[in-house]
Length: 61
Image 1 (spheres, rainbow, N blue to C red):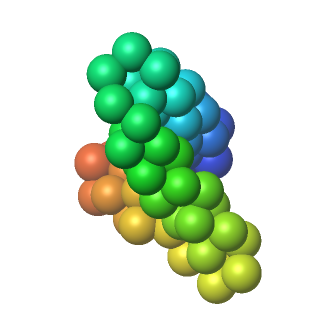
Image 2 (cartoon, rainbow, N blue to C red):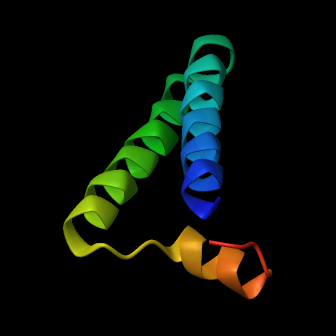
């Protein structure tokens, strides 16, 4: 369950940053880059801060 939530949030943030970059300011692409770097980091280290937050909120794994 947590993995699906993490993927949904990551995808939403990337799409949101692209839309904001198109309609507001190009610097919003840094948000997409930040999300991408976090996805790469979590694939290497097998640790994700959002998973820890969801666990503390009581979301089942």
